[in-house]
Length: 328
Image (cartoon, rainbow, N blue to C red; front, side):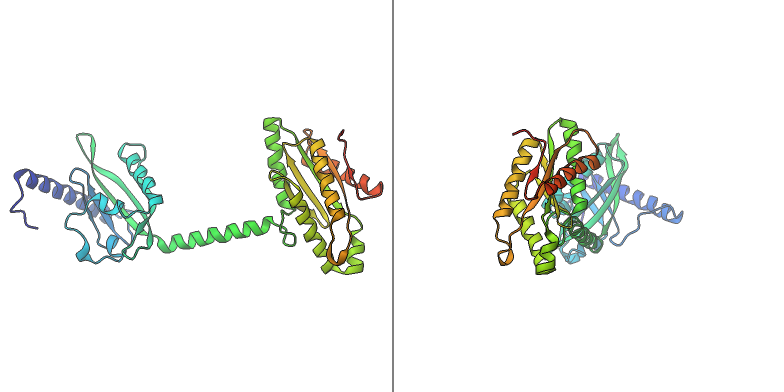
């Protein structure tokens, strides 16, 4: 580097900067000799002189992004890297550095995406800390950076697959609405909410009348189609805040948050009527029976049992009806 045109002040700043960097390298070398230095990685170390805003680093940090060494400026600033951060990660990185500089975090630590020369993004894990102070203020930082693109892509793919598995495990495979487990989890959450807010909560249980006759006379393929159609009728008949699921076999449940028993019973009757009027496969006529109950500080088992008892009362009373304690 040609220093002939530097002013005396610039030369002094440069000397001080080099002295700080030299001291840091000596400290790291000593730690490595003692086998105490844990930060070893594939992209190497970086050093940031805050006063001069000069960053010294292993060229791998930039060449991994597709740049040639000749494209690296003679004086690299902190902004040389932050300008390449993914827009969604920029503020997080700034906050992480600011928190460390102001003593809110013991270290600067962040995962971020940084733009490569070809426009794609790579994932870096960056970790650093203040190592030198000047009159009590941060003067010098040292850190290490890792290219974690492959690891991160594997992690994101795994998270995606887990989300898919979670969705699959929460949905009934045939009817594509919530399954038994999801219904119970949803009901638990709604009970917690109604206990907190004292808002009403009601449920309904429905069962297809004489479903065994459908399977025996038409076959299980027809029976399955009836279940699919019934699930569709129920979901189209309820409100956006309600939740429907297949409780088991030919039995379905609807959860009515913030709903009185009277309103839940009216919606249930609407569902029953829609099923009775529907032309199922090959003109098959199907009816359902149902029972509704409102939550009254009992257990989930007791609440479901209450609705189930009313459902079977509907069966004994001739089927194709909704039984409820509601007063209309």
